[in-house]
Length: 238
Image 1 (cartoon, rainbow, N blue to C red):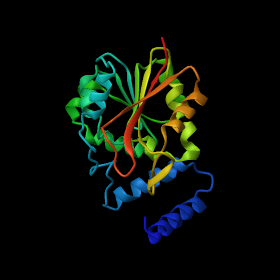
Image 2 (cartoon, rainbow, N blue to C red):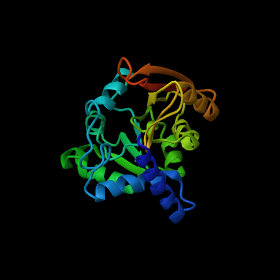
Image 3 (cartoon, one colour):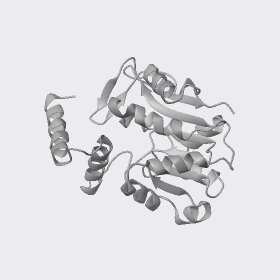
Image 4 (cartoon, helix red, strand yellow):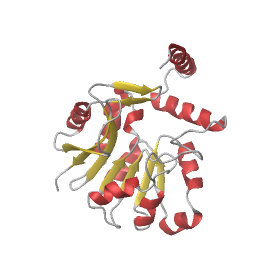
């Protein structure tokens, strides 16, 4: 990354931080994304110009690989504006898709993205992430929790909280799938994205709940510039 770009991004962040001294980092991420969308530049992961990195059915395909059934309550943690959700929503029974994200703005964009007939038929649930929502989700005992193209946006000092929320929703028999760009060590990819080692993921899971088993698999084969697209498989025995 060029020095001028680094300086500009640092000034942007610290300017926002001076205006919002007590706000969590997550609000800065929402601010940056929505600023791009409102300015007309768009964002590759959120809003009208969002596009899947591979294909829209990716969430559904990985969940099917791990045994998803239409009646399984499934949490899409970090669902954004639902760019990968429609095939999953269509597959699941009504009310069995539950999307969660940081901001109501993201969820509103997601509702606008869904075909009205799909939304009416399947009644997906969408909620802003908060302690009360995490507790309600746990009480309903979701069978699957998936967090795809989300982990990379989480800085190191918020990583335990991110993994902790996913683990907190797991009850015996649940499986969570967490995509992350894997590198040998923590590595910044862009201004708001990081690659990280799998050891960091495993350690955070163990801190959140040592009873959860954590294994890893590849999203796609091979690597690019030292980064693999991997995902963690978290399971809590029934």
